[in-house]
Length: 129
Image (cartoon, rainbow, N blue to C red; front, side, top):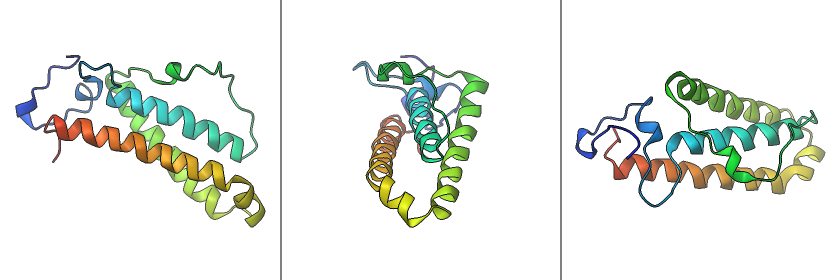
């Protein structure tokens, strides 16, 4: 077990609980968060027609373990990216939305899938308030 949180505590500590992993090689909450940041930010840059960072096509490098303040900052970054997505979609042209509809739908499904994994981890460890 990566963190010192006990299942019976019922308390989710954002700094330590976020790196808990099961014994099945599934990703931790912080790894899922960093993965979501990578893909949401990259797609947002592409949607805004900004330049994209170099990517090696190795999806595993997008799952990073984040500790303490890095994890707390990641939460703010992901929230900011999602808020920006809402704004750019609100102000996008019909043509741009039509062009991007499949990518936006895929990104929403991707976010829902990984959010479900995060909820599952928290519920299985009684880290739900």
